[in-house]
Amino acid sequence: MSRAGLLSPQLAIYIFGGLVCAGIDVGLMQLLIANHVNPFAATTAGFLTSLIVNYLFHARVTFKNVTSAATFTRYLCVVALNYVITLGIVAISLSLTGVALYGKLISLAVISVNGFLLGKYWIFKAA
Image 1 (cartoon, rainbow, N blue to C red):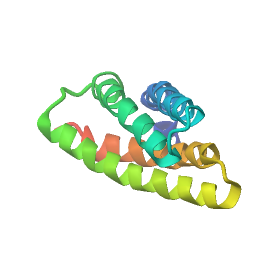
Image 2: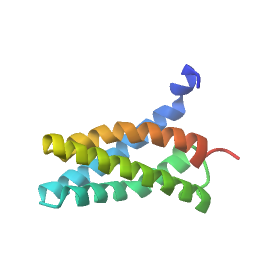
Image 3: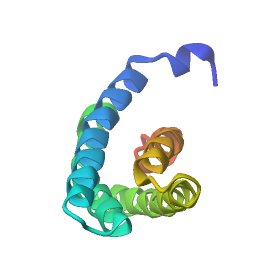
């Protein structure tokens, strides 16, 4: 992949959409934890809430692809992988620091790279 490809407008749009969805995800997680919801349930709620917003934004804005059952199915495969990665990193964070937020923030960086590459080259790949 060329350096120019990494600095593309498409990547900037992806990052913007990801930040909006991360705000939804982390904000809801923290709100629920503050209200004494189990950290794993709170992590799950934030993740699932931002899932639909994320799919629609990236399908229509970032990758300019018509949504379909096939793209949504591939998207859900990536979401499942990213969910497992997120829970694993949150679990490590909880065991090391007792704070879920640290793991959540670290996981966002990891799953962002994974999501962009799989989104561009697999989920929304132009036919």
